[in-house]
Image (cartoon, rainbow, N blue to C red; front, side, top):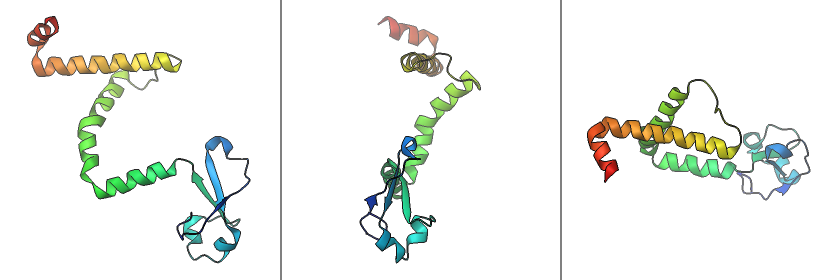
Length: 132
C-alpha cells in the first residue's frame, strides 16, 4: 500500500534481488497521484522499499512517541559497546566464522563486566563474592 492508500503490485526487477529491495507499482494510480514525487522520483513509477523498512518505520514512530528512550539507551547500552570498541582499537575481530566471533565478543563483554565490578565493589569484596 502506498502513502496515498493505493494497492501496489510487485514488479519484475532483477538488479536488486541481493539487496532485498521490493519494487512495487500501480501504473494507473501512480500516474495521477499528487504524492508520487514523495514516493519515488523514478520516471518508471516504481516505489522501491527495503523488505524490512516497516521495522525501521515502527522504531522511528516509537522514538517520536518517547524521545527520552534514546537518551536512556545511550546511558545504558551504548557506553559498554563504545568502551569495548575503544579497547579493541581500530581493528576488526581477530577470529573468523560466526561461532568464533561470538566467543571473542563474549570474552570482551566478560572482561568489561569484570572490570566494572572491580571498579564498583573493589577487588576484595569481589573475590569474597566469587568464593561464595
